[in-house]
Image (cartoon, rainbow, N blue to C red; front, side):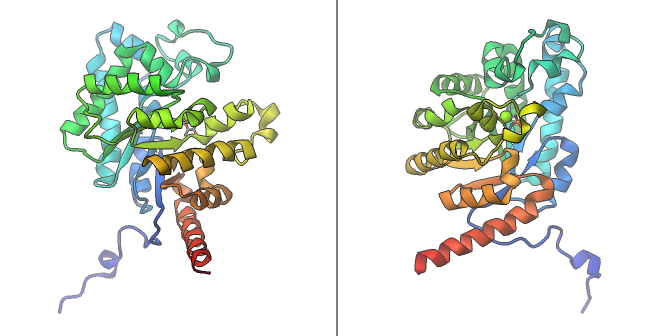
Length: 311
Ligand code: PEP
Ligand code: MG
């Protein structure tokens, strides 16, 4: 009998605990996709495209002025493809562009960016996408090309929505780009108290999932700038108000059949993991280096819940 060399016999991904709650991973640069996939995560809970776009050195608007749409779309296709390929058939949730204006300003064409006192409260996320459809559509075209290439593990996520109107308009753009919202998994980030409070209306708009962007949800709930060191000590993702918004949203989502997830930094913290699993969240997306610990924490909480239920 021929024996396999030990190296080859070793499983490619570490053995992970089986959990009912999925544990996914956040990916911010395509080069990290391979390492992220090797964690054994159940998919990508947030694939950011900001890095792909910002490293091009020109604002999306400048690409359009120079008829460079094709190059812009190609870059997004190639970056997203790396993650979709590494994880296939595990799902990869790609988010449309969400960079604040101050990050675009450093690029060629950045002089045309609006000057804002509060970029975090300003022209970013879905509001920028809906206000500037010529750029927004290029992102959706890139996703459409990937679907056409067979990457049916992609899911589309919209950042910084406030209400059903944002979602319905985004959905219409998806349709116009040739992505059928009835056939594809798509959803939104819950990053503002408004979105959490309007969750029933967002669900009626047809979303498949809602993912808590706690980095922003915390800053907007507590009115604490996430980048301001002077108030850093009162920036608390576990503040009762933040947890109430999250808990209530999960409850409503469970009633109406919308999946819930977290993709903010807090998803890597044990206390948040305990809270979310207790509430019945569908998945948790953690930082690459935290996936393993989160898998074990989820397992521990699920076992405790099971024991509690039979006592
Ligand atoms: C968040 O707000 O929690 C989030 C994941 O989005 P970003 O950090 O990119 O704003
Ligand atoms: Mg955010």
